[in-house]
Length: 172
Image (cartoon, rainbow, N blue to C red; front, top):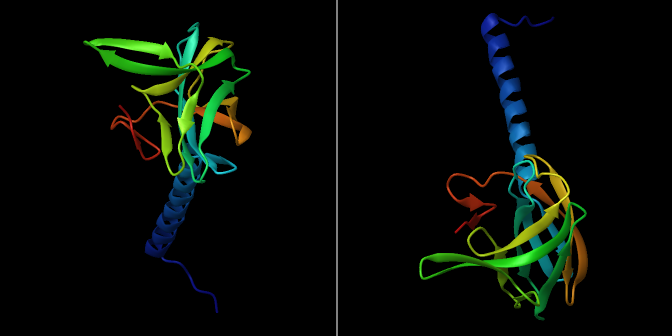
């Protein structure tokens, strides 16, 4: 004996299938928007960059790195085929004037600590862009650490959210 579906049961079945599709898409979107990498005791979370206008000579990049080990490490350098150079910068306010300076020698990551490169603080400057950073693009880069060595990462090009958070980090 075969069961016949009523119009109401067909509608309910369609709604259930649609809900499953939406949940699956949300899971894929969450995975795509939050990505991390590991090298030794270091965990690099969610490298991302802002989109740039056509012809812009520079772009900004952000991420956090947590040292889960017992030995200090240091972010020494970043390289990317998307730019002529990548520099570590620090933004600060002095007497009401915003200043941005390149950081010489890299940045320390103490054991058990997280170094956050965020808008308004430490960040990366991609200098001499070869093409604009467009929404949805992935920018390859290599991070070099004093002890952990080199790790290849991708910076996802996206807008920061309106509420100022990104991958669990509060933006300045």
